[in-house]
Image (cartoon, rainbow, N blue to C red):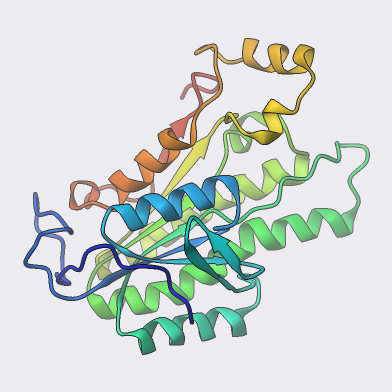
Length: 262
């Protein structure tokens, strides 16, 4: 299995002591972080950030490929057999699984009156079940190491019904947020945190391709007056992987420019 490139090595601590960096020079065992949806806009940026932070990144997507020089391993996260095999490959490689960033998702555009049951269920299967399926298997390896971080990429659509995407997308991301809380409660005693990040509209090829009028109208709905950036998402991921976030679990970080305030 091609599991990315370890940038720095680090010793596995059984619990994250307050104020201690996971990238300390005296860390001897490699810490691995899985990033799903690694061929996508957010997933690819997260994979690069994780590697630069010193972890051994394991980028996965439904199809194999290459992202920023990192080999992406094929794994359908809705298929438990494939997920179990991925975990075995990580164990065989000798790294201690420390983190999982669930960035895999599909964003359908069929509206309320157009979406059909097959499409609705497919979106929930990928976005919601897939996130839970791999989180459950990953948590077993994390528990063996005494610590872990699960980070689920949700969406502001879970709260607002969505700026883009259909009702099935909004429902799937609301499910991700609820499942994050379930994981947080179930896994806290094992030293594993589970948190979500709910981005708003991002500056991306998709938003750049919008007609000027539609793009302007979308930006006008954002109090910050602009789209978010990938760096603002990856920065939150980087923080949630650190010991400083060790007491935060079950939370959702809203990165939406003020579109939704709670």
